[in-house]
Length: 468
RNA sequence: GGUACUCUGGCAGAACGGUUAUGCGUGAGCCUGCAAAGCUUAUACAAGGGGGUUCGACUCCCUCGGGUACCUCCA
Image (cartoon, rainbow, N blue to C red; front, side, top):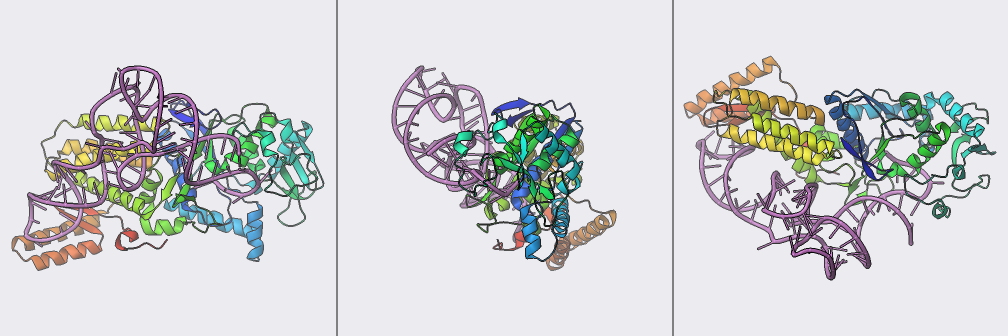
């Protein structure tokens, strides 16, 4: 499998048959997660599921940043503690992402639970004379890491001007960044340099190395983390260990709205809760995978609607396959084979999910065509069903199972309706159809038989205009 | 200003230097008691502008331009 590496700006091969270690920078838990977070995390979720489907054992670590100025500010604003804020939003995180069918990571380490590791890490840096203490905290000395800027392709002297933040006179160099901030206010921990809390970047270095080792396979996150977060992580980690940090850096593009990045300051943030409530997990996942992961994707109702239509086709196809009962099998082995190869090839070519989805939907279209012509054989259906299921599992798309009782009830109502239709009592027949619709069951009348499907309930479908 | 990414038909989005991408949408038709869904078929003569290399470029090179992101809050 080939993946584009941000650091070397080239495609790198990864051996799918090997076990892999992946670290994903998660969220800072001070507010609700939004669709931008969802995209990054869903991309990695699918990457992981694909690799696992190929037999690779994946160690997948995703952190929570649970100590940070934003959390503290929020706590102050709400007259509560930072701890309560981060707990609340971690809980919220899991609600959102379980709802999006994201598989739980191997571990979700938190900064606050790794203070010891962080302190030891900083001690090492100080011992190596790469970090130094001032009266404000401990700082990483950028000039001690000659390769600083290699990830974001920035030149140190061009960064020097860095006018955005007020210069801390205590620092030797304005570019130096805090690994430990001294403070008397909660949350604080004791350290050799005094009470305080860790800087933003150090937790990821300490925790990724703790769980995955000094040199692991893939490190990822949103594009906006390239600088300074990942740049600083590399500087700290490689200075500390002396070996290459991550082998591949994978960065996911932003979700934009009308071409603009989603951000709190613009006020155009779409919370997962809101979007999930309106569109459901499957449509959102399709949306997030509809473009190449490295490119930005523009959030729009139109695009979600398009994915909703596609999802309906996938659902219909599923039920067509369940109901297929013809004996006349065609030689569809080749279609299934072809789809499988195309799907896998697309993903192995820098994880091109759009192309993978194309082949997924091509098989669906082909199947629905056969079904409409009453040409879908039983064996063919089984083969196609298995392949579609495999792809859905990788993509994290789920069609809810239906219970036996429900099925019996549905079959009974359909038979009733057929009877009424035969007797040309269409009003009664339509009443039954309405009743089924209320159960989210839709009927599809083919020439020879009527099949049914359980449609996922999607709020947005019945609204003319979705509130954004 | 610097760096990175990006610019394909109404929208989304591919492809090896040489064939119709494909999907959504839209038009027409088929199916149906009606509908929904589905199907069939038609539809786009597209490549940010300008140069160049080439027998031939969406694909390579140069140049100009647009957009977005980052330049210590950020997935």
